[in-house]
Image (cartoon, rainbow, N blue to C red; front, side, top):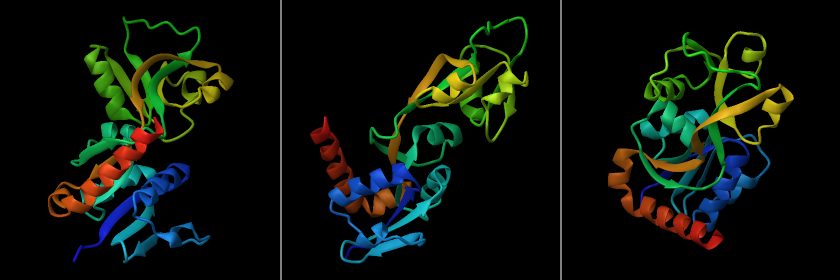
Length: 212
């Protein structure tokens, strides 16, 4: 008898798109589409249990084994470096991690660059690779106002359309890395539930192939 497969889905639009992929892969759970505030849904017929979590927490649930698999943005995987397997780039939730600043900004390499970001690790690694001395200002929201108010020289943040930047008179100066949603697995689960996980992996990969 197959054991229950626990799947952490990111709350929001991305999670809904991801669930559709699981459903098409044969792991449907109709109750997840009901209008309620429940967070956990299961379908014993196909041995799957889904739960909604904050997108930035998916990797923690998977790394610690509360979920066998889940879907997390590449930004989260780069920032927190969880000890998980990255199985597949789902090619959804596409955006990029970028450096942005006021349009007239010119980098004076004679002094330390002040960088405001939520993604301290990504920023640190990026500038370290360039040999640039930086001062990280870790913020949790409204990062765009940091350069406007003179708190920072640049920001490192996720850019989707660039509209928010434009509205705040900022522009992208450099792209650090493209970002998209990834299917990830707990390492132990991958060993013990490999049949179920590989079945999902194969189905999702063929869906993506069909959509090309």
